[in-house]
Image 1 (cartoon, protein in one colour):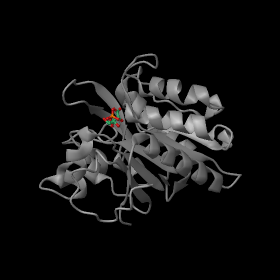
Image 2: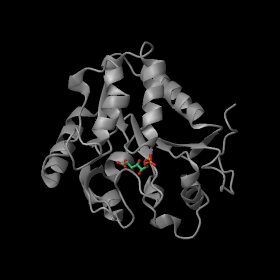
Image 3: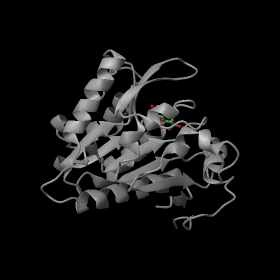
Length: 252
Ligand code: 6PG
């Protein structure tokens, strides 16, 4: 299935689109099943999470949601680096999602042990097909070096791994991370890559225009087996794109 690329005038419009997309997909979920949402980290999701909390609080049955993380820094849940803390402050504290449906990665634990434990939890909690968990929605960000989740350049083995989650290391800070592997990411029903901002324009063009070396970039390894992949860009991050493959018109 070809990538869908949506380009918004502003990040606010991108965030509103995400909120309406999420609301619609949750509503489509049969009443007797749950919707598994795998959150991304970093700073971009803050605005997205707030848009969801502000616009969808009353329009979604939040009892149907199970929340997971696509990656976590190996820090405690109160640490300012924690992706869980960012989501708690900008999303989870603002919505009535039952605490027992929020599955944080315990960054404070031994990384290798937690990666195994979280893989087992994820496999138990997420609906599977042929023994592979198919998350309903995986949110991903895009790093300026082409990383996604916490799969950094050189981490190709994480995308071909039989594991669901594994340990990685930030190339500059050497901070240990726990990250979803390709098996989780590429078996999702829907993958949304959030990549607004001028600082992402170069990398967005490198990947979407398949410029030299693009195949070596982790975000280029996001190739859903059967699901859909949607890029959410703004004018700034789309500014260096040459091709208009599957580009949809900027949302008015
Ligand atoms: C993390 C993220 C990471 C992030 C990108 C983009 O834990 O940092 O999962 O993959 O999505 O680095 O981050 P920004 O949104 O801050 O640009």
